[in-house]
Image 1 (cartoon, helix red, strand yellow):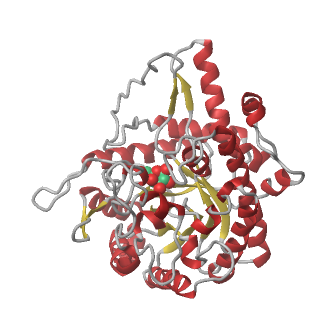
Image 2 (tube, protein in one colour):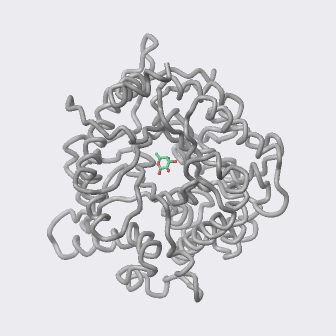
Length: 446
Ligand code: FCB
């Protein structure tokens, strides 16, 4: 991959992380436990038996991490706030020491002229709310809106964007559908109801933040994929249509059209969610931006064992097919179906079995992956999709949920025993690539 794709000077270049995956300090300075603390402390839930107790120790090392970002020359940093750090129980008293941490982080970013893009919920629900039913309890949506408004009140004029949720699909389907993620429930009916409460909470939080008033753009981050039938058989095509309906349209239709997709409702039957009068109007309100996380496509086969995709470009260390064309297809499909706001690609990247050899981490595969996806998103951009920026997942190797520390997504390597950070080849490449994209900016910053 040698082509150079020139992006507009206004394009935002960033890196992304999330609180639970990097912060550590799980019980420090008044932080309450989250469902991911509980889940990781339960034997058997995480493949390598690890926890997020220390993770990348970003809570204490954030100045070093922000300095690394400044060295890379990124415009923007996407991170999430740990709700239970600022409101230990998820309702009631605020924890000022928790707010102070995010204030310090923002100051550090401001001093480096790096824009902050905040996510309110990247899966780490306060355990106190889980004890009262978690996202299955409708009240949680209202507590979330209170938290959202408080973030907007305190920080809304200091951050560029606020996303309500990161990938609500995962909370619903992995947290409640197949028990891979916290809180570890496997129950279709619950998972569908949870997805509705997550969407409701998004809408309630949007209104609550609008009432506060701030300069931040407000939106949501969704993980999406195209769903391709493995063969032309009717069964595979039906499976693909349902997969797209339950994963993409399930979140897009209520937000942009004010209703759930009929196909999914029909297939769910009795498992369809309880939706109260007025809920869909709350969910269906203007958002200023949409974040899109793209990693792979869905390949739908009804055969046993399921037919596998060809994987012409190979697979990542997660076993995920490398399929950049899917990003172009997805963006064009969304553009045709919805009146989209500006889009940020809020996550894209790959796990690679990186090792340090003579102080170097030669992750050329990751560079190739990113370049191919940048080309794919630019193809969609040139066909009219309004894409404003790209956030590489991830700045650092980090706690990859139920895979623990076994999977490395960072462009910066972390030695978890010493917390030493080492730039991988991809980090050096990203820095040089950003200089090529906007020599003026980097020269000014130097
Ligand atoms: C996404 C998550 C992110 C990270 C990447 C690899 O689904 O949002 O936290 O785990 O996958």
